[in-house]
Image 1 (cartoon, rainbow, N blue to C red):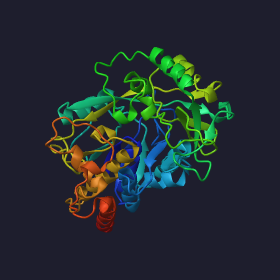
Image 2 (image 1 turned 90 degrees about the vertical axis):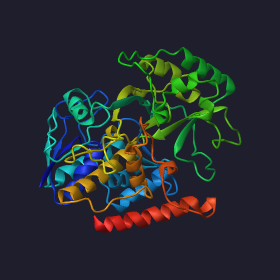
Image 3 (image 1 turned 180 degrees about the vertical axis):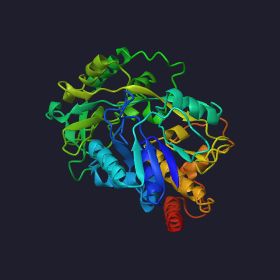
Image 4 (image 1 turned 135 degrees about the horizontal axis):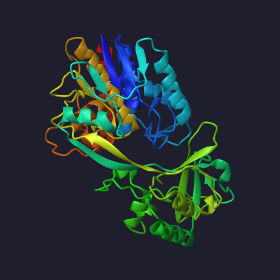
Amino acid sequence: MEVKVIGAGLAGSEAAYQLAKRGIRVKLYEQKGIKRHPAFKTDDFSELICSNSLRSDDLYNAVGLLKEEMRTLDSLIMKAADKYRIPAGKSLAVDRVGFSKYITDTIRSLPEITIINEEVTDIDDNVPTLIAAGPLCEGKLSEAIGRLSGKQFLHFYDAVSPIVEKDSIDFSSAYYKSRYDDENPGDYINCPLTREEFDEFYKAIIEAKKIEVHDIDDEKYFEGCMPFEEMARRGYKTLLFGPMKPVGLEHDGIRPYAVVQLRKDNAIDTLYNVVGFQTHLTFKSQEDVLKKVPALRDVHIVRYGVMHRNTYLNSPNIINNRYQFINYPNVFIAGQISGVEGYVESAASGLYAAINMAQYLNGEIRYELGPDTMIGAMANYISDRNISKLEPMNANFGIFRCAYEGKKADKKKFYVDHALKVVKEYAENV
């Protein structure tokens, strides 16, 4: 038994691993070795383009529950994340180089997987195939997916934050602190601004020059990745209630007017990500704006923020809640191109799609996860036929479906305990 997996990103790598561990031979197609989108920087699998954070690791947060469900199902992505995690308060952040290398080395070590560095230009729906081409999919492969989906594609625009050298930060102004954490130095570097300094900073953003992106006909942003200059244009105080919120970041008994936070980006503690500052300003403008922050007046940017177009299916009526094409049952799809949003969500979709594919190849899909688990709730959401135009969203309890009549304060604990019980039973069967 052999399948094709197209793409070795988070979803594709997870899917290939899940199929291989079930004894299914996988031909994993990845074009990065011969052709690389400008957003990527290496040839390793599961490269993190945007943030190095996988968001909250709190079990009673929706994405925290999703991670634990994945761990229960032996997720390769979660193994890599846990092995290469770096301090980030209550979030799970990773050393992006070690994370990707671990996944690449693991995939290459599995005898069931054959890696083919080749650009896929067509899809034979008679051949068992799992598409995990990613949201940057373009060219003939995009056209091939369009034929399967009836060209029902949608898109939004995503932006990436700059990364700076730690040695170029002025620590006479900056300090370590995680929000609301008064007991230890914290995991974030905080760069405070006074009211007057923020005024100057804000003026620089409003006057900054954006990179012209000529194929944008409708600048539709995913809210979780809104460029910070677009947030600023919504009003003077928008940033103060967003990425520059000073609440919980008091230092020496003083609350700054605004704060730029930096999060560690690698294990050796030399690079930091500017939190929430995804942007598509010109490179010169990015320097000019960041250097308005006192602690960053001599900052050295090693990777500038960039912007790219993300493509995804209008999945309802195209795929079912197993990530399987309704009209082409040999073909499954996973990752952001399927309509989920976020690193962890993409990996989870690859995991679940692969398990469903393995069951399908063995004769029937006997076991499924329902909307009383976070993995199942995401699959149900993107395949909900009551939705005419899909809007990608991160894992959240709003799409979770589980009967509960107790106290509101105990609701999330009930959800989490129930979901993990269901997922453990599912794991024993699949």
